[in-house]
Length: 366
Image (cartoon, rainbow, N blue to C red; front, side, top):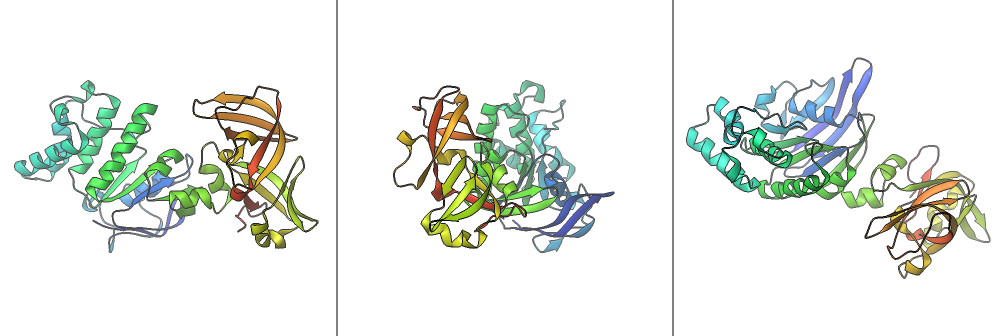
């Protein structure tokens, strides 16, 4: 098994910088997810590690070995792509065994590895089938099996669930997490889906425009985003943002966003005292906005008068799309809430979980 290190890595395509000074240390047996919007450079970073792209500057290490000039086949990695790329004329067994046959692995060893991988993935009964006889989820498991039999130091997975329907994505997501626990190998996983990232990762690296924005555990990214981009990208629905200023009145600190005026909790006044008069962005997650009758006890709740624009009943919750003055925002509320379109209603904001960002730098103020 092995750690992976990106040390000041750049990848340029002409004038375009796809990966910009990437520095990440991925520990042995860790499950790291690279997440970001399409075109942010996450797949390019993975392809550089796989040796499918040459880096422009910096070093990539697998364990203690610099692999910049090591051919892909000698890097001891296995990659699973968005496209399953199975050979249609071969059986599942032969698809999984093909790479081992090229390496002149003994037949008995091939048989052992394929059968072990099939057992782990629950596809023992499919080994004699051709890819056309398989569902999308089964084909994805075969592609995973083909990687497992390599017994690599590092698994690389590039958006492997993108071609699956919603139900299969959830199932396969769980299977990949179990696979990581069973194999005890380093996994590096690329996705644009932050739900996949939050549910699977040991740590998440958030990338935008080729630049690493923040790397941390899922809970820390959610609770303590470093900037507005991370705050808006992690969490679904996204965090609500309100342009505002911090004002002082009668010894209290106030977030003044015109139609929304909120008192900063006493315990957090010291942090923001030096920002009085400054323009800021106030952030609050939809799940921290409640209707008064269903607000949890013990929170510091500040009221806001709103008008209901749209309601979406999700079964276990209701999404309320609300208006207050010039502000549009989303609340994720109790399913017992009675709210109709056009209705005026009060909601309360849990100020214990508020976020404040500098409007100019977009960095969190803590």
